[in-house]
Length: 474
Image (cartoon, rainbow, N blue to C red; front, side, top):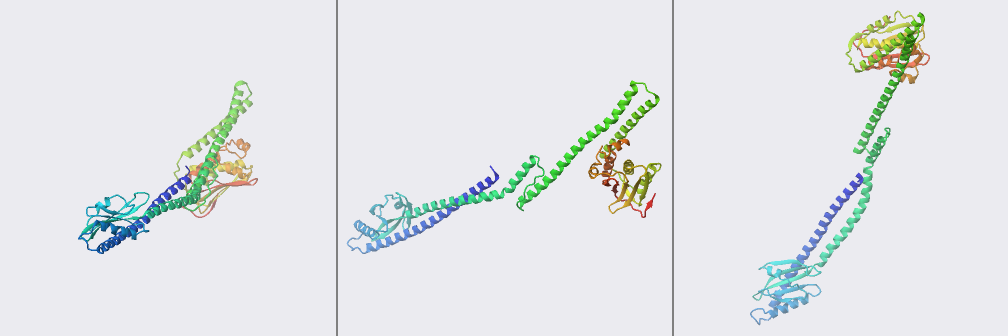
């Protein structure tokens, strides 16, 4: 059963119970009030008849010492005659509770008569036929005789009014329930609309549409739930995209790795087979062996880079305070004998926190990539600047530049902008991937600025140590 139907059914049951119980007590209270009024009138009527009987008994000529039964019957007949049209019935009994006179239609039940005591009045409600009566009884003393006077008052109209009251209230209650059910149906539908929207959004996400968001239609708790659901969906969508990107990256990595292995292995196997299958002169023998050696070194470099990346990802950084001059002096010493490109070093003195060997590896990779991307004779600038957020290291070249699409993927393993140029320098596209992992350990990232045909700048920021002043050129 739908939640809106549960709300509707619960409201209908609650309203029906409340209206039913309330209506019963209301109608019954009106009935009891009317019955109390009728009983009071019945008692008053009995008192009047008692007084009238005693008065009539005193007016009888004193012919006998005691009131005769015939006189009692005569007085009873006269009292009944006077009350014609009122629906009044009476019955008179002697000291032995033997009936002396009874109106036509008076009940033969004598239980009330037997219960009348001295100077008390008794009453009961009886239902001898289709009518209801209040039967009242009292003791009378007249001319030294003790008699019993009973009256019957028709209260059928009161019971009929109660029946009509229940009927009218039942019809009104049914009408109210029908109208309320219609109203509550729309209210429950409106109240559960956020739930339906959330259900629809969940189904959409189950079908793979992670970009779908539930519509927020209120600002209450359901609205907050919708906002939280949409936030959860956004986080889930991001995680799914990240997982998809990671899976794609792994597939690209495996494909690139297989491709990078295939080329040198093919060369190694081919030239090795050539060496063993035929006899060649010394020059060709040397060239074949050199090809085997070159491709073997390339495989060795690629395996070492992959190992460095794996170790870096799984390692923990133990930073130490160092002077940036150590890094720039090391890089200058490495490229001091290099003749193909002109290196310019410019840096501001300062101290940083980091792992010296890892940062040296980053700078060496960046400088090496700058050499590969630049034409012989061009200038490569290595610089360091103080920034508010940390110390900035950068390597700038005048090479071919990198497109925006390549800039986004250049730190992926085996990704190469110019594969022919990279392979000619025994590259496999692992250097920048290693740099990205090392910088991640330092809480930094590689910033790439490049223009096609004009060159590129690779920079990263490392947190400060104890700073020094001034600027220096090497």
